[in-house]
Amino acid sequence: MSLPAELPYRHGKPLLPSLMARLRRVNIYTFIVTSVFALLALPLIATLFYALATRWGASLTPDALTVKWFLELWTTPRFLAAFGRSLLVAVGALALSLLLIVPVVFLAHTRYPRLDSVMNGLILLPFAVPPIVSSVGLLQLYAGGPLAIVGTPWILIPTYFTIVLPFMYRALANSLRALDVASLMEAAQLLGASPLKAFFLVVLPNIRVGIQIAVFLAFSFLAGEFVFANMLVGTRFETLQVYLNNIRGASGHFTSALVITLFVFTLILTWLGNRQPAEQEMPADDPDEALTTTMTDGLPVPLPSAEPEPRHTIHQSSDSAPRGDR
Image (cartoon, rainbow, N blue to C red; front, side):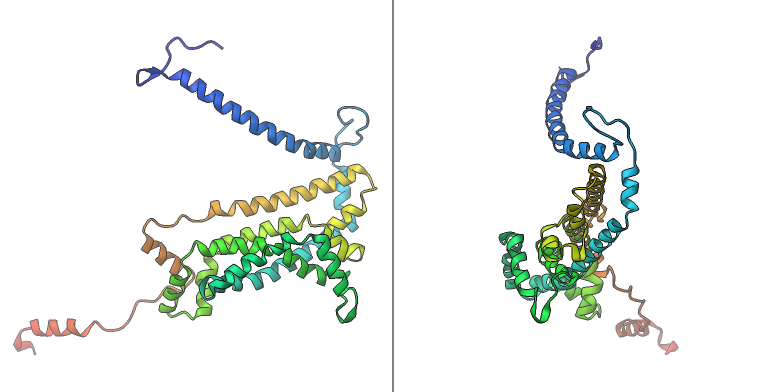
C-alpha cells in the first residue's frame, strides 16, 4: 500500500505513524479476542452445520445443506410436549420466586436489615450442596409417605425455586440498593398513599428492570437444568432436558438440531435480560427532580385545589380598598 505524498500533521508531529501504531495495537487485541471467540464458537458452529447437513461422512464438508431436521424436530409431538412441560415448570418456579423473594428483599432493605445478612448466607446453599446430593435427599423425603410428589411437577417447581434463589435475590437487592426506598415510601405516604399502595405504585415500577433481568437470567439457567429433572421426575414428566438425554441414541442430525434450538432459545433469553439496562431512562441531573420524578411515577396526578385563597391575601386586599367601598 502506497502512502500519500503529504502526511497529515498535528502539533507539529506526523499523525499517520501514531495512527498506524494505534491500529497495530488495536489489531493485536482484536486478533486475540477474535481468536478466543472463534475457538469457543467452533464446536457450536460444527454442531450447527451438522444439524443442517443432509449427510456428513468422511469428507471435510457436508454433502449438502437442508432444514429438514429442524422441521422434523418442530413437528415431533414428543418434543413439543417436553418443551411445553419445561416452560410450565420454569414459569411456575419463577412465579413462586417473585411471589416470595420480592417481599423478602423489600423488608430486608427497609425494616429488617439483619435479614439481608441471613439471606446472603442462605443464597449460597444451592452452590454449596451439589445437585446430586440434594436430589437424593429429596427422593428420600418425597418418594413415599403422605407427600409423595416424586415424578410430578410439584417437586420440580419448589426445587427450581431454590436454584434460582441466588440470581433472583441478588438482582432484586441490587435494584433496591440503587434506590432511596425509605424516602420514596415516606414521600408516597405524604401524598396520601398507603404503604401497600406505595409499594405497588412507586417501589415496584422502579425495580421493574431488576425484576426483568432476574427473570430472564433465571429462565435461561433453568432451560439448561438436567440433574434435578432427571433424578426427580425422569420420564414420568419428561422435560426438554430429559428428552434430549433420552434421544441421544437417535440421529445425530436430529439431536444437533435440538441442541441448536435450545442454545438459540437460551441466547435470546439472555440477550433480552442484558438489554434491559440500556432501555432504562437516564436519571435527571437534579437529585430533587429525580426524586420527584421517581416518587410521582405511578401515582395519580393530583387535581388543582379548589380551596379559596389564603385569608391574609383577602385581608390585604380589603385593607387596601378605599373606605367608601366598604
